[in-house]
Length: 147
Image 1 (cartoon, rainbow, N blue to C red):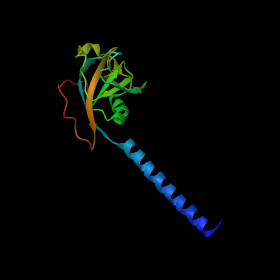
Image 2 (tube, rainbow, N blue to C red):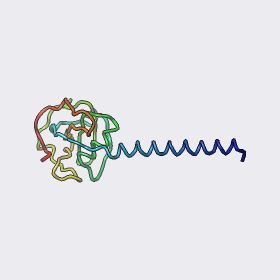
Image 3 (cartoon, rainbow, N blue to C red):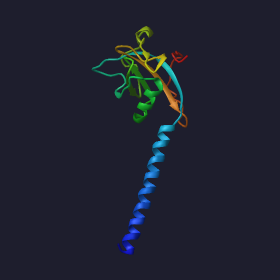
Image 4 (cartoon, helix red, strand yellow):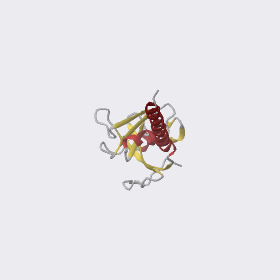
């Protein structure tokens, strides 16, 4: 290998190393963002043909409110809705189909049994934020399943 070829190889290795370090530190920042607060807003009706919170973030057998917020962070949503105990939904508004009686949001979160993860066709709606992000100013109501 020529001197020039060796220099290019060394520069390429240095660049790739720097890129890996930057990527790893970016991933670590996302992983360690501290969940600061969640506020339960209420129980709201949903319909499978017209979702109240349109973005499905996924399911988790050990669903918690915090886990749903982590899943919805990719959507940059203001609100999350937990349904059927394991489903996580996200959106910037809620309540299109109206408020539901609280006893219809009866399914405990599998990973956090003191909190509720919706009903069969109802969302337990929460708002929240992470440290370093502004608190959500759209929150209405003082209901809480968080205690």
